[in-house]
Length: 147
Image (cartoon, rainbow, N blue to C red; front, side):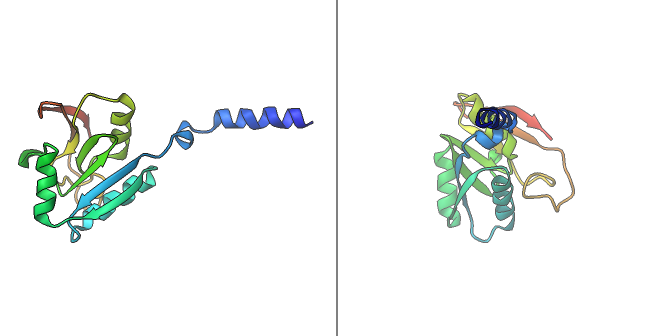
């Protein structure tokens, strides 16, 4: 009887979603403390399995972090995150961050420039089409996902 239960338990584990087994990535989010949408994006990340550490920075310190990570004004948004050796700028969907980490892509990171309506953390604004851009090692970009 014990053997049958063990086999059943192993079978159920095999059917469990892989996401439940994957270690939740740690992500550090840097933003201005007065930004409301940054908190909404953090909640999106947490709901998708990320362990989030938030850091409030003054505007000049946040701008310096962006520059140090290769985020130009054209690529910028309201918050910057660091995860798995990558920079994530703006309202990037959690699924795209997970995909980037899983692919171990040779890149600086991802960005959603600006604050497009309907992106994670900006759900209350009218929905806009937006692109997630991959930032390559030289600072160039190419589309990574479109919503």
